Length: 255
Image (cartoon, rainbow, N blue to C red; front, side):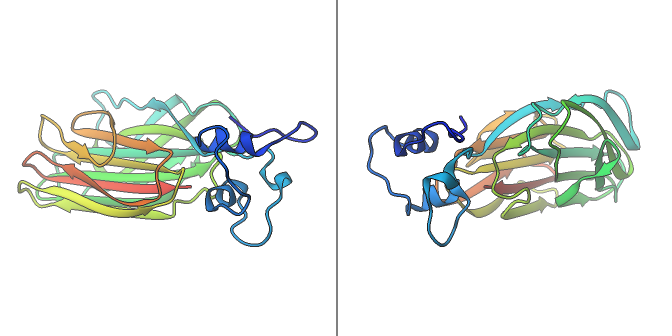
């Protein structure tokens, strides 16, 4: 939910509910979780700073299907980007496999605007296994046209997510890894902030697909999406098992 705006009353119990803390649990305005919610890391925090605030939420809104298309720039028209909102950030996690080497994911556009690249990695040896994450603040509209540009013909799968109530549109932690065709578990350790979001995308040549651990598997097999919301403040290791094949994966965290 979103905390009440003026002139509606607001209480610390409302704050507890928004933070997922048991109703009636004592909490102060100086609590680090309250400061994060108020977007006030230093100085005094008043109740008015909490009005209209919310713990970040994430909606997996759509997935682009390349079908039988293989191109260096594939268009995905009319994909859902979630409910319009002044705080919305559209996140695209994309994975691809090509039968030719040296073909990374180079960029993604949303309605003709270049999205911000978080990370893009690939492994290559006569073929390419790639993964990448992009984001863009998009307050209006409910659908959009995307183009994924790569280094050569392939059929990438973009997963479209909509984040709301973030403190910053850009992620605060990023990781990535690739494997050179051996049985490998790719891992990255992130220091996660409380009540945030963490998103991972993995790609493998193994037809049986890969497996994530340390994060919740959501969609896909050879091109796999995973994410969690309302993260705890902790160091967390997130891994992608490429199932004895060539693989790549990226992970990023927002708050």
